[in-house]
Length: 372
Length: 126
Image (spheres, rainbow over the protein chains, first blue to last red):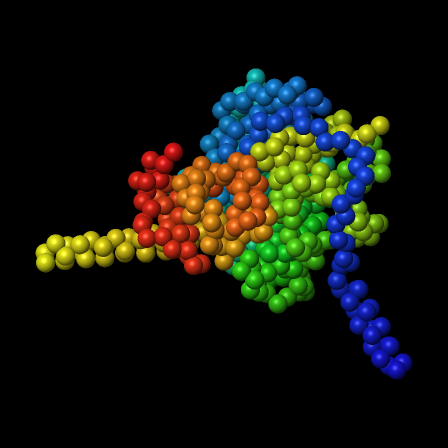
């Protein structure tokens, strides 16, 4: 009898040591915030930024940029043409850390055409002057265009040292791109603000590699933020059926796709039997079932006292904003739905004045205002 | 006799065109549609409507095809007795590709549709 207890205990211990805790998402009945629509005339607001605390700039996936102030939108002129197909289009926007002085804005987008054999993710910068883009420079273009609709990435994020991080997803070619350093796709990249490649990038000097690569083995990262305390880049990525992940990005590391995953094919068949392998990183957190994560923010704001330090993730599939609480060991201890049933959340950002904003497909841009 | 041969021949050509369109449509479906509508066309109940044996698809065929051409249906719809209210995005398909994917959907997972949907039809669809 004692033996059985010991065995059971051993099974229990192994179980808790290798699997993350089950944190079913909570739908709070009491809400101490209001969701205020600040602009409603949107289609797919893929990304939101702020020119100042009263001025939103946002990207429509079909290839348009708007500046919104007091519920009035002005269309930005001279936006580069995008390859609008599947998940491709105009994607992220990011302001240069010194935007106030240099007016530089960065864009990621699907570039290409049917005649060019499809498209792939590009990153460009331009000056935003008088509601128009000028001096447009393409800083990076993923090689090998494809007509496949999947997995362009792409989020942009400057870190504290002025490096620009961006993501390209596996472009629907998981068996080739993510694990091959000679090919674009399935990577997190790091470049300088002018597009040049830093000398201390992890794969610099290796023959034939894409030297802008910072980490690899990714599927489709569409959420990225700079952690305000640690200065690290955090991403989340879409898994297949199950297996969306949160990762902290470290130079040169392999995040495993498609060799390891907590997901399966959409058809229900297996992709791999492995959930972990030596030399490959485990996610900080994974979602089963998938939520379709889009947009990612770390809440560092005095506006929402009890929420400070939470992670915010938009869900395309379940149509809410998810708030995750971590303990000191970076384990997720609590998850709740914010703005439940609001629609397909594409982006979440914290305004310079500390308020949370979300962009929701066909519904608008919303602000979360705590009740007094 | 000559007429019969001609008819037979043209119907052979027709069915070959249709088969080829369905084959191309299958690849497009896997690439651009199956993530939400699922490889078996059954969708996700309450979120992404089914295409397999969908009453809405066949009762409102024109609206359904237009939704692929232009990007979704606004407002609530009821498919096989279940409510759906998520507007599909514009996938950016070319008109010939819309025709291919529609031919695939209309002839898969137990769906059957005798006619072929052509690029010309999609072009004129408003």
